[in-house]
Image (tube, rainbow, N blue to C red; front, top):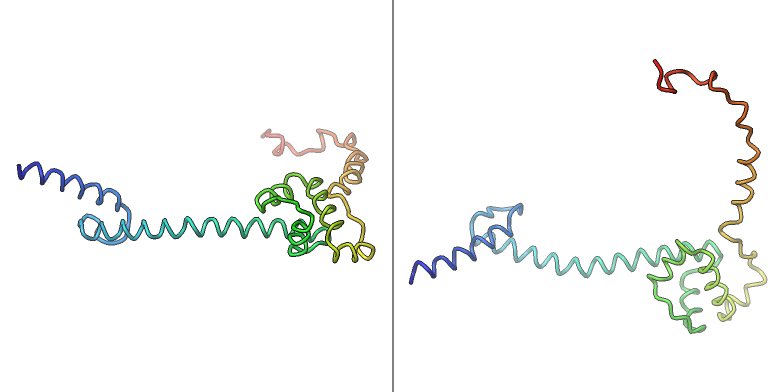
Amino acid sequence: APAQARGLASRKHKKFVKLAKGYRGRTNCFRVAVQRVEKAWQYAFRDRKVKKREMRKAWIRTINAGARAQGVPYNRLVSGMRTASVDLNRKVLADLAISEPLSFLGVLEVVRANDPYLAARADAMPPVVSPFAGLEKSRQHWDDVDDSALELDDIPDFLLGGA
C-alpha cells in the first residue's frame, strides 16, 4: 500500500515541477516549484484584470482621437450620448471610429444635436469634414501623372534583375 501512496505523491510532485519549468529559482525542488507556480497563478489572476483595464484605456484613446478630429472632446461625447440615449459601448465606438468613420460621424451628429453645450458651439465650429475628403483630389493627382514617358531602356539592368 505505501508504494501506491508514494506513486500518487510522485505524480503530484511531477505535475508541479512540470508547471514550474522555465521559472526562476530551483524549480526541480518540489517546495520551490509549488511556490513559483502559486505566484504565477497570482500574477495571472492580477493580469487578467490589468488586460481588461488596458483594453478599455486603448478604446478611450481611439474614441478620443476620432472625436477630437471632428472637434468634440471625449467627455462631451460621452455625456452627449447619455442625454441622447445612445447605448454604444466603448469597444463598439472605437471600432466605428477606425473601420466605419462615416457611421462614427453620424453618432457625433446625434451627440451634437442633443448636447446643449455642443449645440451652442455648433455655429462657431468648423463644418464636419468627411475623413475621405482629400481622396478624390489625391486620385486626380495620380491620374495626371504621365507614366508613358518611362522607357525600359532608362532603367538600369541591376534593377531589372539582369547582370
